[in-house]
Amino acid sequence: MGETRSALGVICSSYDGFFEAEKKIADYMMEHKAEVVDMTVGELAKASGTSDATVSRFCRRCGFKGFHSLKLALAREVLEEERGDVNVSNDIDRHDLSQSLQNILANKVAELTETVNMMDPENLEQILHKLEHARMVQLAAVGNTIPVALDGAFKLNQLGIAAVAGDIWESQTAYTFNLGPEDVILIISNSGSSKRLMTLAQGAKENGCTVILITNNSSSPLAAISDYRIVTATREKLLTEEFWFSRVTATAVVEILYLLLMAGKTDAVDHIRRHENAISPDKK
Image 1 (cartoon, rainbow, N blue to C red):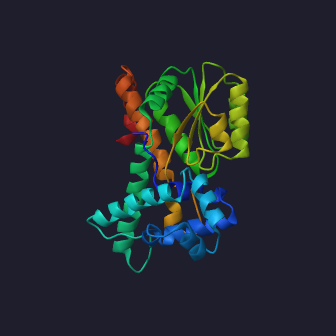
Image 2: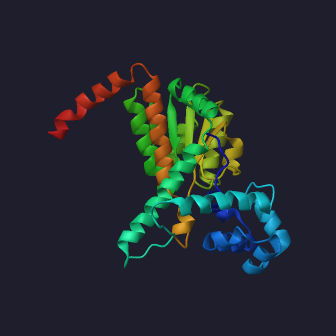
Image 3: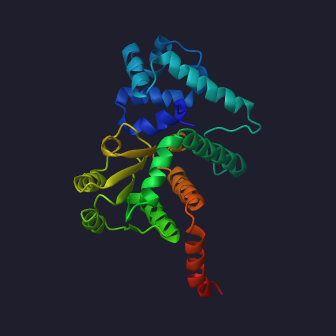
């Protein structure tokens, strides 16, 4: 675990932060990944309409030492795809639903696999310890990640860990400013650059509250201010012209935390059983 993330994964996750020239390189690599493996810096620069210097800068911004390191990571991904039993691509076509389903599945499996591979057990154990000993856990998000935060709060409460989440930012802010050193705020943010969530993180830090972040972007302002980070992978850019945050990996991280907390909390089953007994009449 804690392995280096894939070339395509880091390109997709970092895409919004690239300069326009760097986006040209990213677009070309995602469309011609097999060809790029055999290219030189100059050839990629010419093919993408950029320069050698831009290619070198692009590689460093993606966390690689240089173009050679990026090509090695990309070559591994291409080889893994070629070894697969199912022929997949990044195309989604309403006129070919069978193949489109295979393409979506392959990319989502890759997202989940990469997310788990990037998890560091020591960091994860520290996060679990903070959550299970917190007086209160606030899960905070904006936009389309709010449902993930709401689900996370529900799951933690099921385990007997007091948690809260909301869908109104002003209410979230008011709650955050009442957190203290015994509390935890778990922030879910794709870009890690949300000004509203940064306000919550700063307010929590000022009160001595522990800040945990789930994000695609490990180099973001929120990542810098957080005490603990879980970095997720996304391949949405491979499937759509525009980039949207994939909730699959963030939801999976919440599920992983839930299952690991349940496994380590001796009274978790009792809390879950009590909750299920309370709501069971509604299910009949």
